[in-house]
Length: 327
Ligand SMILES: Cc1cc2nc3c(=O)[nH]c(=O)nc-3n(C[C@H](O)[C@H](O)[C@H](O)COP(=O)(O)O)c2cc1C
Image (cartoon, rainbow, N blue to C red; front, side):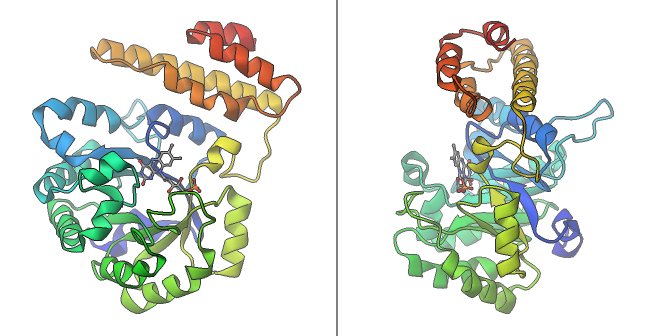
């Protein structure tokens, strides 16, 4: 597919994206966010291409790549982009070819993850230090699929100025979209995102690859924060929101939820959790309960006694107990 007729070209101006978040933006959580207020684009958690390419890892990889569908097989989360990572070009080709058949609208290559294990394996932000390999992976993925290929990256591995050579190199690959998390790998998430570099990065895009959608990420908490940045820099195409969802699951809308709405959304999350757990059990797999606890604060945060209630929720052992407490 050429970049000119992919879904990226049909999005509204200043579109909003749900960021890929490992252990968070799985099939269940994406449906929760779709119910609260849809982003313009969904991203999955990242999937390792070598895991998909191996007999042992494929089952897990495919589980991560499940998309919610309606009775007619139509995607309920749409458009949806699968994010992948790795360092083996042949495995990128295998995975890229599979993603098209699985019903994804696009594929995104992670070149920004700062996790030590991921970097040691040569993936994520480590790709910034192996640009030839990074380009080979992009090219192989593009050749293996008709899906539009995008990249999510950081400014550099160690130094901010690395963006001056790294981003042009990526833009020369005629990507459908490029998301820039405005920090270096070394900075992790410990310093404010470098918004001051936005004009220069926009210039690079305009000069090198005007058709590539440019998306900024880092500390953009909600729709109104995205609007404020758009007012200042109208040439930005899109905004990606990650941790903002924990502060407000309705962050892709202008709506401030009431406590009742948050509680209803929590109960909806529990219903989806149970359905997924049952489905995976039928597939001889398992959907763990513990990670559900990461979300309690998202729903129970502002009312009197919320800390006590959260402590009680933490002590629950299953969704039945959670529901009893909430009701
Ligand atoms: C729990 C968690 C998991 C993440 N997993 C991924 C991931 O799988 N792929 C990715 O590209 N970025 C991942 N990120 C980074 C986010 O996508 C985003 O770049 C980062 O949180 C900065 O944006 P924010 O300030 O809006 O949160 C993760 C972040 C968090 C907090």
